[in-house]
Amino acid sequence: MGSIFAAERLRHEIAHIEFRYFLKNARSDIESICRSLERFEALKKEFSFGIVSSNEEDHLQVEFRKRKLAFKDLEGNAAIEKGPSLVYTIGRTGGVVTTILFPASSPLGGVPEDHIFLRIGPYSAHQLRSRLRGDLTDLVSYAFVSGLETDPSIRDRLRFWWLRTTHPHSVEKKFVRPLTPGKLFTSASKFTITSLVVALMKPLAFVIAYIILVYLGLSSLTQHLH
Image (tube, rainbow, N blue to C red; front, side, top):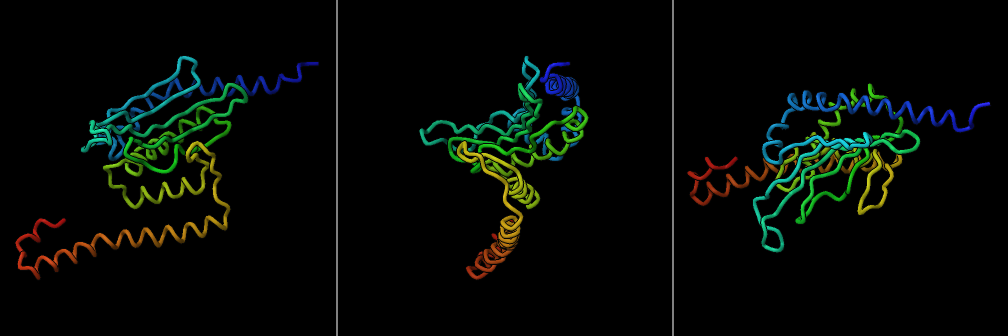
């Protein structure tokens, strides 16, 4: 009769073999995908970019690093913003792989959440590699959603409303569960109305500014409106 722990140990060993194979190919996969991602090069120029793996082969971090903001912090020093990061890690027991997004942050502010769990569970190397493009797209989008000097698109806002609503995450180091279907519907309705108002306000503000300048006899300044 074999050990009662044999099946679990086999699952653990297979999971770690799969994760090591994922790590072996991850760097070249990530570099290839990033070259094709819209807005990636612009972010890389501002933050710089890195791929870091652990010696224990249980951790991979894809990160935008640091940049100076256009203003000073509360102590009068140059304000520094740390870019968002994407982390893959495998547990030392059970073979569970966790994929996590961390936001951009600075002493001057940021988004409410500490991080968002994209997925938690047993994943093969093939499954992880097949999700890389989507994960890296989310990383780029998160830079715009969580950054202090960025202008996220409606698609960025929708994507991260969805992730915050349907994925577990952490706020002030406290675990937050996804919404139930009923609460999800209510939240979706509120978000849609808010997004429409934001989308409509920009052109409305332009029209109001144009009318005021013409009324004041400053029509020559209207060419500077964007």
